[in-house]
Image (cartoon, rainbow over all chains, first blue to last red):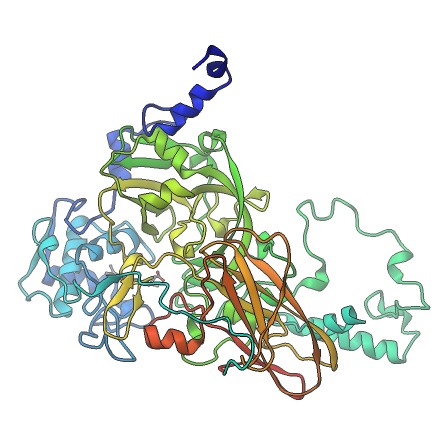
Length: 185
Length: 428
């Protein structure tokens, strides 16, 4: 490589092509651990992201009755907002009922979603104990755990949801229409 | 001739529609006779030849009246509209008035909207993008930082995967706005996501990126790393101006050709991981139930689709003779290659003209001249893209996917023109 090429910026282009060699622009600043901790709210199926704390079904009923029932029904039957209970065994029918119990593949998603988005009118206000508890209660209403279940960072990822194996990859394109012009039907 | 008829034929779908109809009717009545109602002002006076229009006899509005320009008050009926099925004011969608749009670009105020917990009022000075997880350098960016990066502008469609979901079981939308209005097309400007990820230094184990919004839903989706590095954008401007709040101001993810929901709005966080996060929006929602009880997951691409926007349901043809059939087509697989139109419920098809430019994963306008003989007709359009994919019929989709899928319904749409000229939504 000649000096001329270097000066005309070929070196910069090469740098860009190398993944993660170093920062090219250097904008922004490093995120501190404290900053990350405040925003790092996601929970994965393997339990990564679950905080300390725990809650049981009875405590969960209290949280639910106080903070959720007005929108999701006294027992999770729904109305005005989403139905949270029931529907197991309906997924093959023409009028499938998809709920946490019949459709959701991972129990960890309940924790993740309830903490980040519920109650709808006050998201990210429940304590970890409350989220574990209401998660236990919703699992219990769906017949997935017993009345004495306790949810925490160890027990929740171990729950096997009824529809755990119900998801398949995208299979499209799955139709093969023919662009016919005359006498088409 | 065609223009006047065309304007009169275009109905006033939607809220506030009546006013235009009444205005037109009133104008017609006055034109037909009563002159000399002089006191009534410009709107009710006869401003047609041979009279000199009132608006030529006085200075118009001051230039400073609307520092941010607004449409003519006579276009008040051209607005976004919902399906009226919202549980909460902030959780639902507003459809774009496709029947009133003319070219390929959707004006910013008419871009469809789908939000899950309202539209946040974000102060851009306090908005931050955090990039962390499996990266060498966890980073925080301000909006000022992000706009300093090299930028790109690209014209692409954006479509909610629920667009047309109600049309599968029975004809639902009383207008093309309600049936197909969850699609828009804009010029999007921002920085390539690959640029920002390279700055952070992605660990080779990083195969997925969680994108999280700063709304009250904390909207979150897992994006395959391949797409992030291929053509994903961090967008801060649409059609030349900063994003509208409804579109994710001040920052959104944009994934060309993919379902709208995954282009997370109000983007605040990107977390790199080895596996998908299995968020609620990629398990409970935005998955496609199949008749055997399974559901397809990560169905992200939007397949080719088209719809006739004139004549369409809620229009009424008032005169026989020439009508220009016009509509839009788009595909997440690339450029639209051909659009065919049928006026006999799919028995015969003619090729429509495509308006240039025909861009990759953008809306294209198609047109076909048509002589309406005054009889019944069923109008359909069928898009084909450069990958060879042909928009399917409803029967073909149901044969593959049953009746439970709702997302990704790209079936050929049928509009029936009755002998009285009324146009309705039908299955044919």
